[in-house]
Image (cartoon, rainbow over all chains, first blue to last red; front, side, top):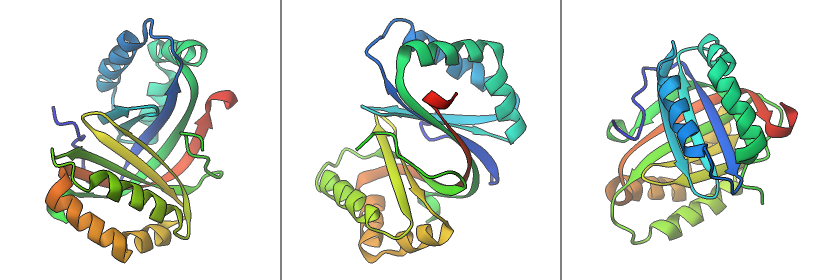
Length: 108
Length: 108
């Protein structure tokens, strides 16, 4: 799998999730991996990219707003979101954005 | 400075820059820091977030498309883009997206 998500011609949607972790490691990696796998099974999922140093940025790509809404309300994801707020994140911000244009290295 | 960018109420724009580095280190950090500082001086710049493991993700936030266009065409930035393609990146993708909604941890 390429690290850079292969996404269709715009428009499509991006969920930009920027977060700062607490020091609590317990259960985090397992849940993060589970959520990545579960997201990939959802209708409208297009791909995901993730990186972390002090700040973590995960960008997931979706076909439309409805797909994002359904994923946000997924029962397993709701539980993960709750544990995230309580245990794993000291701060985060989620941004929902409509991708209007994109460029790849080879095409410039 | 907080790691998570403080941005105004949407709508505003995000430039999602996802990249994979080559092994060439020479000049990279200096240029990356210069570009961060220069971007912050541009009209319409709202903030930036960055993280890197194998994949790097830098998301810069902008007031409108015109601000992004001007930044893309900035003469120093053009030179950095050129060196990036030739030396520092083995692959990248840039996505221009309109942020329609956002949530913070405390507000959920």
